Image (tube, helix red, strand yellow):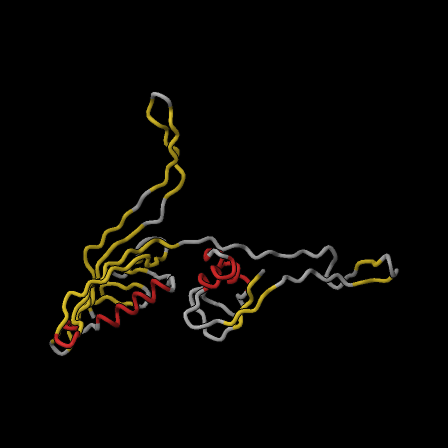
Length: 224
């Protein structure tokens, strides 16, 4: 197989099978970078610029899927939209090397039906994707330090006896994962902000190994 690259589980290739060309690749790829600056006006002079931070890189590219070259356009369409709607984080490979220092997410998809035959059969489609560099900072789990040594006790002045120290228990609500659920959507439902999904992830690391994959029927904790 003549490998071109990959985006997550989507492989790009150019090959020949039994004398027939099999092709799934992309074209018109462009990569943009920018930086954020704060502008400070000065009377009668040009404003001063203060550097704030680099912005995430962005890539646009067009994938052409044709039945003539052994690709089912509608199947690829469904896969791309699933990646986008579930916030799937993907490694982007090109020529055997990673593109960029971080992984990528699909932030927008534009579908063009370029060839339709009798009976409404879609023979060829093109997909223009916009990818954005994905990075986030994991919050460190809070570590509770007991004021007494393990196995020790604190005095109970009222009873004159001893009492083992018991740390406070956090309050949780239990939620059962349903079809179509993502941590982002669940966080938006409970907290009004999808970006707070990390709270749910941290509270369920014993169950959730990948924050982008949930299994229907899981009972997960929702910290209050």
